[in-house]
Image (cartoon, rainbow, N blue to C red):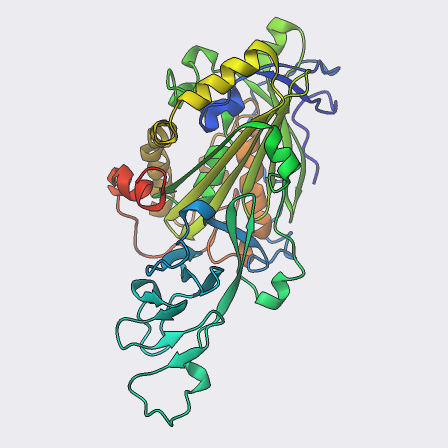
Amino acid sequence: ATWPFDGGGGSPMRCQALHTLLAFAWVYRVAALSVGPSPVSSGVDTLANCRVQPGSLGSYDYKKQWYAVGFEKDMPKKGSPKPLGVTLWGEPYVIFRDLKGELIALEDRCSHRQAKLSHGLVRNGILECTYHGWKFDSEGACLGIPQLDKEAVIPQRACVPNKALQISAGIVYMYLGSPLEALTKPVPVGKDNLDDPKFYKKCIDVYSFSCDLPYSYEYLLENLCDPAHIPVSHDRTRGGGKIEDAQPLVWNVSSISGEGVQASFYRARNAKEKGFQAWGDMNVDAPGIIRYRFSTPSGGVFGSALHCVPLSRTRSRLLFRTYAMGLGGVAGLVFKAIVTLTPNWARHLNSCKVLEQDVGLICSQEDMMYRDPDKTWADEALALKSSDGGVIAIREWLDGVGPTLPFYEGWSSRSEVPPAIPDENRYLESRYHRHVVQCRTSR
C-alpha cells in the first residue's frame, strides 16, 4: 500500500542535525535536515477512510515472531535460585538459567496442577515447583516427582513445552513458535547492529530503559508513532518539547505490509520559516519495533529501537534503546559529558516521568473505546492529515494483521471486546511496580 502525505511526492531525505537525544521525545526535536525538493504542503484534512482492509495482510503469523521480553542485564544471574515470570499476549512464561548459565524459557505452569513455575526455585540448574516438588530441566522434561515410586515411569504428559530464546544487542527475545522454527528465523536487527563490537565501540552513548504500562500494546504503538503530542504533553519536560513548537506535520507513509510500516515526516512551520523540509524517518518492524534514525553531516548518528511488547489485553511493556555515535568536536564532548555525568537511575527517573505524563490520557482513550464495542477509531476519531499520519498508519497495519492476533484495535476493525471493563484507576499504580521491580539499575 502506498499512502502519500507530503503533497509533492518527493522522496524523504536524510536527517542532518538534532538538538539532543534525551528520553524518547528526542524524535521530535529535529533541528536541520537535508533540503527536500518538493513544496511545503500541510492542509488540514480529515482521514475518514481506511486504506488497508481488515485481514488483508493475512499471511502474518503472530506466533512466528521474535518478541523482546527484557534486557539481558535484568535477567536472572547464573546460580540465581529465583526464576523470572514474563507474559506475552496474555500467556505466561518462565525464564531461568540452567547449570551452564544459559537462559531457558518454559511455559509458566506446572503440568501437575497448573501452579506457576515462576513461583518455584532453581536448584543446580533444575526448575522445581515449590507446590509439590516436581522438577523440570532446560527442555521442559520432568525429571522427578516425589509422590511417585522411584521405579515408576514419569508420564510424557508431565513435560512442559519450552520456547526458544536469543540474545541480540543486550536484549532477550522469545520466539512463540516451535524452537525448531526459531532456528530458521533471525532476530530482527536494525540498520545499526549493536551486536557488532566495532560499531558498539563507536557509540558515545547507549541508553536502555524499560517500563510496564497499564494499557494495551496497540495504544503504546500509537503513542510512540505520534510526534505531534510531544511538545504539548511533555511541555518543558527534559527530553520533551515546548508547547509553542506544536505545529502541523507533513507525513509520507510509503509502505504498510505484513512486515510493518515505513514512513517519514517533517514539521511544516519550520520548513516554511527555514526554506527547506527537515525529513525524519519512522519505521515500524513487526511485531512492534519502532525505529528512528537520524544522521548529521559530520557522520554522527542518533538511533533508537522502541520495542512495544503485548503483555495482556490491558498491559504492555516498553523496552527503550537509544544510541549516539560519531559526534565530533565541541558538540560531541558536551553531549558525552552530559550523559556520562548523569547516573542511569536519574535518566530512568526522567524517562518514567515522560511516560507518566501520557498514562492517564491513554487509559482514558482505552476506557472510552471499551464502553462501545461496536465503534471503531474510524467512527470516533477526527484524524488530521497535518498531525496523525503515523497514528493512522500503525492502526491500519493492525487492521491488516489483526484477525490473526489474540486481540487488537485497528483503525476500522477490532477484535471482540471482553465483558470486563479495565479498572479506571489502573493508571495510578506506582512507579515501583511499573519500572523498578524489573530494572536492576534502579533497584
